[in-house]
Structures are given as C-alpha cells and as structure tokens.
Length: 241
Image (cartoon, rainbow, N blue to C red; front, side, top):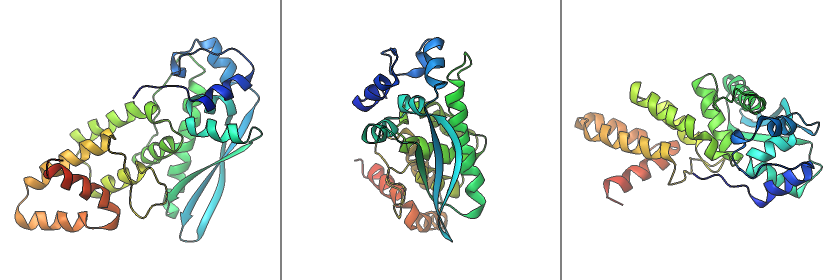
C-alpha cells in the first residue's frame, strides 16, 4: 500500500511550525527532521478503553509526541484537525478479559517505543513481544490508519503461520484484530487484507484435506459468531468469486 499524507496530516505538520520533508514515510526522513518532530514538547496522553465483564474500563498507558503521532497516523491527524487543543487520546481495544489488559498495554507501549526509535538511526519494525500483544498492536494500528506500517508484521504473521500452523483461537483473535469496526459482534474484514487472504487460502486447503468427521468439526467452528467473516470469505473462495 502506497503511503500518502492526508490533508489533515499536512495541516498538523504545518502547525508544528517547522519545514518537513514531503516523503510521507517518516522512516525515510533525515534524522534531524525526525528528532525535531519526535522530541517536541507538544505531548498527548494515551488512554486505553476496553469492554470487560465489569463494564467499560479506562487506564492511562503512556505519553507521546502529538505531532509525531499525527505524522504516522491518518486517524489521529483527523482528530487533531477537529480539536487542535487535544491533549488525550483513547484506544478502544474492544473486548478484553482480565488477563489481557497487560497484553494491550504492551501493544501501546510497543507503539510508543517504535515512535521513539523513529528519532534514532536504529529504526525498528512495528512489533510487540507476544502473540496477544502483536494482535492488539495490529488492531490499534488499524484504528490509527497506520495500515502501511503494518506490512512487516503481516509478513511475520504469515511466516509464523507457515512454520507453526495457527490454532483456531489464534485465527479468531487475528480476525478480531483486523476488524475495521472495533466492537462489532463479529469481525468485519477489509477484502484486500493480505493476512485474511492467506488465512482463507490455507483454511480452505486444510478443509479440503480433512476427512468427513473432521470437516464437520471445522464447519461447526466456522459457524460460531466470531468466525463469520472467515466462513464467508472461504465460501467466496470455494465458489470462485
């Protein structure tokens, strides 16, 4: 996917008050420009919101450079355009049980670390330390309109799936992380998502290789609410659409 600055991002960078490179991929900027952007004093506090068994919970996670986030996030830049004095931003991580809170925090901290590293010569991949935190990071980055920066992680998920076949629960979590609607009852996936395409292809191949009783078991799993997007995509593939 080709990166381009949106009008909102251009406006945010203009408000930053210093000339900025025209390359929309901030990773390619000269280090001097990246330093000025990422170590500015215009900061924003990041919160996390989640649906739990006890209702919606909020928590502060980290503080980041406002204009640095706008430079890489189309969604955040749009929020900033509508509210120039914005000083907090909340990530809705969707459903969450008590055990996953730390994983979501790891994901947001990984994003913060990645932003900081963009200001150094050692630019790193946008990645998190565990499977769940990687899934959460993918989900958050999609909310931010940072899909292009996720290419390396998508390739890694696919590579990992080739080496260690994903378990059904992992596939379900990845589909939720790829959903374009945070709290939908089941994932709503963009058709051109390369991870979905890979999973659909491999799941269809796996299904075709199963015996009848194993296929019946997979069909029951695909009928579950959270797997509707995958089941629908598999049907389209099998029907040649």
